[in-house]
Length: 373
Image 1 (cartoon, rainbow, N blue to C red):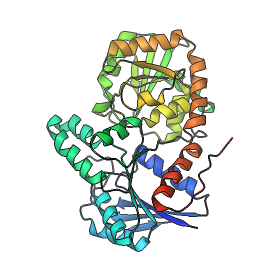
Image 2: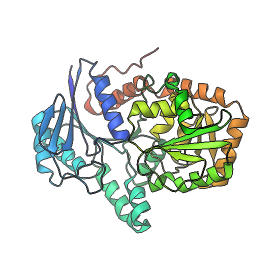
Image 3: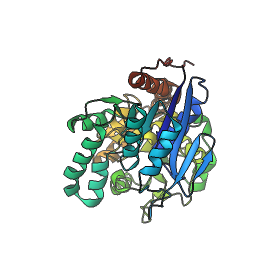
């Protein structure tokens, strides 16, 4: 029996992060399954169809890194109804999930909400804590309406439970273990930085957003001194840096990021509000250990023997963890990190779990065996 799935989201732009990574990997994986038909519905500059992806017009967000924000639900409802899916999955908490819910009602099909981002916390970090109560009420009102809600981590699932959303399942994201691989190590990247052979190269990859706690990261590097070097990869990174910190000036695709990760000695991550922390898995897949903080979803990903955790928002604790890492068998930690990701977080392991959730809400039996190898 065939099943038709449609994903809908505004989190799909040229510089998108984890949601686009998830959707692109999902589309690629589903193409190999004859019993599943898949469409992706996202905002664009104009109405366009290319393969299984459809773009509907929406205005760009000012300073939004290419994101577009739909203003009217009607066209999206009509498009979803015309596609006639058996299941709709909504990936953001703004206008489009309401369109998905209405289309699901008209079609009498289940609708899943994937709670990728902690909207109240993100807004609170920018607008202040006064917004938390209002947005928590909004999130509870929206996500209680879905037939099932997916959360990428235990931290996010517990947040939803506290808001009274009961129908929650944990669905981790994954990583392409062939693209993010130790074989991408390139000694020329260290040479570009002019590092001595004994200097420990740390890396952070991501957005330079407030919740990443980059000032704490930079202060930890000041404490660590000249025997350690940090390279920052990503958009909106700070310009005023300690002498032992550098940054990439250009946009990097995932292949370039994989090369930098594999060529570094460890990932360092001071963020304590991560909803998942995909870069942690990407670094571990590249065979390097992780120094993170004991808060947020990062702490769930760093399994024993794959890295170390510091106290949140403490530059001194973060620096101590880095020193402790390199005083221990850090290369062995990197190898264990790679094996852990292969065993638990490759897309071939993750997506069969997702099919189990789809079968739960649709009643359509789907093969959910985990690929081996």
